[in-house]
Amino acid sequence: DARVTQTPRDKVTEMGQEVTMRCQPILGHNTVFWYRQTMKQGLELLAYFRNRAPLDDSGMPKDRFSAEMPDATLATLKIQPSEPRDSAVYFCASGLGGTTDTQYFGPGTRLTVL
Amino acid sequence: AQSVTQPDIHITVSEGASLELRCNYSYGATPYLFWYVQSPGQGLQLLLKYFSGDTLVQGIKGFEAEFKRSQSSFNLRKPSVHWSDAAEYFCAVRNSGNTPLVFGKGTRLSVIA
Image 1: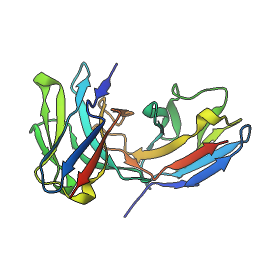
Image 2 (image 1 turned 180 degrees about the vertical axis):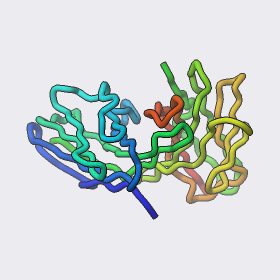
Image 3 (image 1 turned 45 degrees about the vertical axis):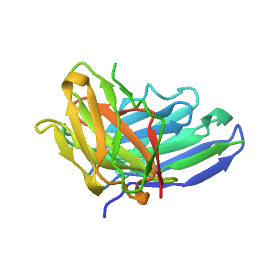
Image 4 (image 1 turned 30 degrees about the vertical axis):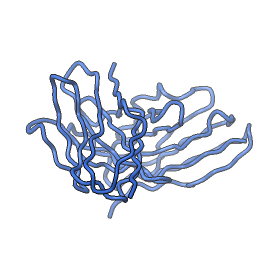
C-alpha cells in the first residue's frame, strides 16, 4: 500500500530555530505539494513541484521558508528562523500530473514553535 | 479566483441517521471537485471526486456526492451514518491538470448514539 511519508510527525522548537520537514512522495509520482493547516486559515498551499521543478511558491513567506526537491524521492520544507505564528500542521501530498489524477496526503508534521 | 464555501462548521447527527454536508464553489470554468475526510491527528483521505460525466458520484465508505452546476454545489451524502464517520470533512476544487487544491474551511461531524 503506497503512502506518502512525512518526518518528523511532531516537532516542538523554540523561536529562532531552524526547522526542516521531510516528505517522501509515493514512488513514481511527479507532483508534490506542501500545504499548511491552521485553525484560522484552514488548509492553504505553500508550494508545489512538478518533476522536481518549483511551479508555485507564492504561498510561502519567502524570507524564512524554503522548499526543495533534492531528488525525486525527497521533498523538504525549511523554516529559518521559526516564529510562533508558524505553528501549524504541514502536509505533503503527491500525485501524477494528469487532469484526472488526485493528490494523496501524508500524515502531516505538527509544528509547535514556542 | 477559485473559492469553496462549506456553510456548516459543525454538524451533529445520530447514528443511523442520514447525512448531507454542503459545499458551494466559485469557479469560472469546469471545476474538478473533491471531498476529503480527516480523522483526528491524521492526514486527509480522499472520499470521492468529480471530473465529468455522471453528476452523482460514489465514493468510499458509502458516501456519495452530487454535482449541480446550476447551484454551484457538490454536496456530500450518506444514507446511514456510523459512529466511525465522526471526523472533519473538506470539500476542495482545482483546475484541470493536477494543480493545487483550494479547500473549504471544513465541516466537523459529530455522531451521537
